[in-house]
Length: 230
Ligand code: IYR
Image (cartoon, rainbow, N blue to C red; front, top):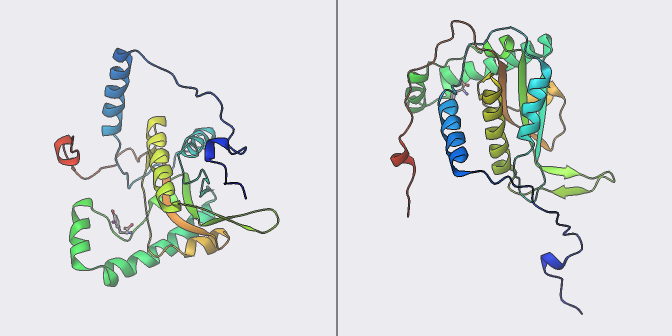
C-alpha cells in the first residue's frame, strides 16, 4: 500500500499565483488611519429611515461578505434579503413576540442591567422601517446534487467572520446596520421557508439612519485594554 500523498502533492491542490498588492509604507499608513477614523464612526443604529437604498450597493456588500475566509473554504452561509413589506411585518411581529417574553420574563436582571445603557426594548421598528432586512443563516452542512451530505467545519466561526465583513462593508458603503439576534430565532426558518440545515444566525436591518437617530454615548476600549504584545 502506498502512503497517502501529502497535501501539496495531492492533485486536488491546484495553486495559482497570489494577487497581492504591495503598497508603499506611507500609503499603508494613510489607509490604516483612514480606515480607523471611518470605522470609529460605525454605530449600531436602532432607528432607520424608510428611504429606499439602491439594491446594487447591498448586493456588493454581500459579495464582500462572501469573500470571508471559512473552514475548509466551505462558505457555510446563506443571506436572505427581505424587502417585501408584508414579510418584514411578519418577521417584526414574530421577533417582538419573542422579545416581549425576553424583556418581561426570561431575561435575568443582570442581562437587563447590561442592556439598560443601550436603550433597547421589545419594540423593533427597524425591522419594518429599514428597506432591507438581511437574515443570515449558518449552513450546518452542504447537500450535494445527489443528496449526499457535505461536511462543514467551524461554521459558527466562519459566519461570525463573514458577518463582520458584511457589517464593515455596509458601513464603508455609507449605510447603517443593527446586528440583531432575536432569541429564539427558529421562526425565521419558517417565515422564510429555509431548509433544516440552515440555522438563523443574525438579523441585519440595513438602510439610512432616521434623520433624528440617536445612539447611546458609548466609548470603546482603548488599544492597551484589548491588545497584549509579546
Ligand atoms: N435580543 C434582544 C436583547 C438584546 C441582547 C443583546 I446581548 C444586545 O446587545 C441587544 C439586545 C433584543 O434584540 O432586543
